Image (cartoon, rainbow, N blue to C red; front, side, top):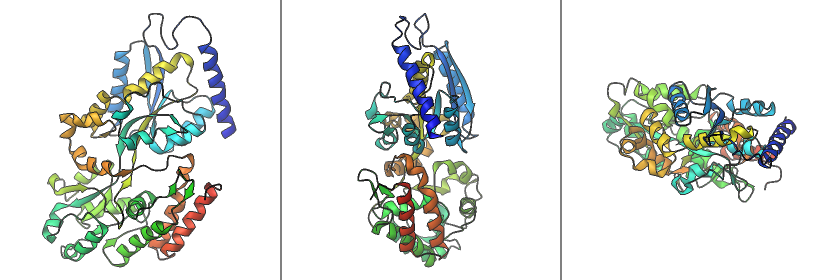
Length: 421
């Protein structure tokens, strides 16, 4: 498949070069009148609650540019990464795709998406973490739109009843556990079935999965072992509880019903949480704070969404596709998506707008986003989570020690990156 994808990209590049040298006097992507023109198919990966807004935003671009035809398609998140690869291999990919931050380097390494340095304006206005996810091999391959991360959700009523402050570290959580148990609730629900939720513990010990700059595997160093040990200690001491079967649904139920005082989750969970028994009649009972610090640091993984342009886009559509990606990443659209969907902007200037500052989601998550850690934006990163998830489950089930789990994860990573240390 990789050979076929590369061929598609090469044909597209040759077509673009031929058009650029055609010398017919007409501006590429423009109509005879000089107006922006072309056809842009937009694959939107947003969820059911968001897609109507993104479709309307796409339609508004058409109003600004009447000679551009935007074909909106919602494909959802599931398997979207592979759907785009397959479509590109067949020469049928959309001109623009809403791309998860971890997909950009994968697509760029396969030459599926177009470098956007020529339209990447006002780079200093983007949050550094968001901008980092658009970079591959010294070039810009996407424009940031939305950022998110994990944070600590807490039940204010239970913490008040226990007479404890919101913990800012694992040690503070352990110190407040006995008082929280007196309320009848578990102090903390820990997800033991998802590798993404492991990362705050790893970052908290000063570690990371890999050091991309040094081309070194680091998940099995001392910090990685300490991260597994932290999780094991929280569970063994009774400070935390977990379930390795459908852990996300279990933690939502426990928190929403008041059976757990705290969990770690993302902005996508706010709506469901506020509909829960503990919060539906008292939304102010929900508190959100940055994830718990470990012994060395504090941080959660950066997530979010970017806009990418297909490298095989026909020359007559390329300008319109790039302009559409610029529009979807613009301050105007980012402010609108915060106002209408409570999504977090990637542009610093948008956070100065009163409507954004007053948004509850921004108030909840901006402090957490400020502590978000850039992941390693390398094509192989998509393969990091399955081995880590497997070893996390082994630790939770007492089937492996923290050291064994870290070593096994490191061994799996070295199979993915055989030339790394």
